[in-house]
Length: 265
Length: 251
Image (cartoon, rainbow over all chains, first blue to last red; front, side, top):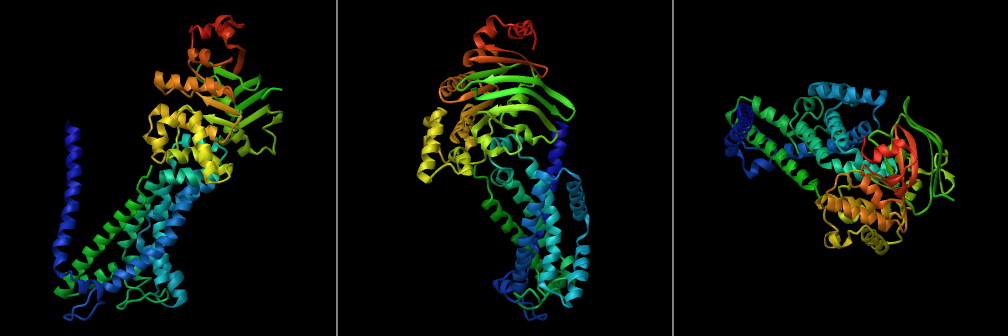
């Protein structure tokens, strides 16, 4: 009884904090949130301006990073779960665990040295590399855990029908673990969509709409940062509104992916 | 010629020997039951017959297992086609996270047995019919296999095994997790399937062995103690140990 009360109180506490944060963001951000704000590029103080290019930039950065990071992470996680019991698997697992613990700014500096300095300019590509590096270990480890949860009996059932190992993994194990794998992918998406530090050194930020990989790219987080550190009240309001947009975006992506990967059987 | 002919089979998990010098012939279209106390090696032996033990890294086999006169432990054996020929049903029903139809179709698909979509449908229906499940599921073939009851799931797994047209069916305590009515259905099914298939069934249930099998093999501590016609095993066995076991004196 005491246990139930205590744990329930903690659960309510966590939910309350979450609701408090979300409602405060909504309260502060809703006033400046107009359609203009959503499509315009940033302008000097007093002339309006918005985050249109930052929304597009964030989606492009996230999209490209996901395109590389999620499949790669799933592949590595599958390898670890199905074949990674040897010394090599142990090393890969250790590296992935360590990478999860590395502060994201380190990835930013790393990619800055490796890509930006080599090329001589900030670029979308560099931003994507940094974000993908952050995503891969998260997806890897959750995928491995989820695949290990698939009961051995299910694999044996397929093996006993004459299925080769790779088909068992592809046809039975991964589909059975799909909901969990999607959760891992979503964790990584939410994580990198909220990253600022690695982008400051790589994609840098931009005041214009851009779709080119070899040019600096705006992103919501960097734009929020720029608006928020300014001395202007008007820009502070824009930072709140942009934050609201960012949170909503994460929520939307979550709902869509949940819907796509929902349990069919 | 025997369908399955095992001679001098030894099996090891790492250093521990789980099966000792087992020799056994199983003729075609026989139901043979394996009985014995837990850990006696009957399941391990069953799994040597379709090389399911290959999935255990430390496992090692000595001796030979001939199926239709071919040693299945020869280096050039195609394990996939062996397992297609020697189907298996497990203790716990293990349907795939797919629809009822796709569960049965899976083995047919991966082995490329069917000619076209219509042929696949026919094969799936026939397998479900042979597993005495068709009438219960024909209106919901595209719903999840997990929506079936435990007994239905087990019959689905039998249908899945039948769909790839095996010649031998290995059953590892197929009814141990089921209620008496579902168990009875599985047993009736075994008797029915006997007309077409060679069946090896592991069971903890003496009455079940008596009801469904032609012969019974008694295992103890990794050794094959006795194999005889079931009738004889339960009334007048050769070995004292067998008598003690089947009469429930231990185990």
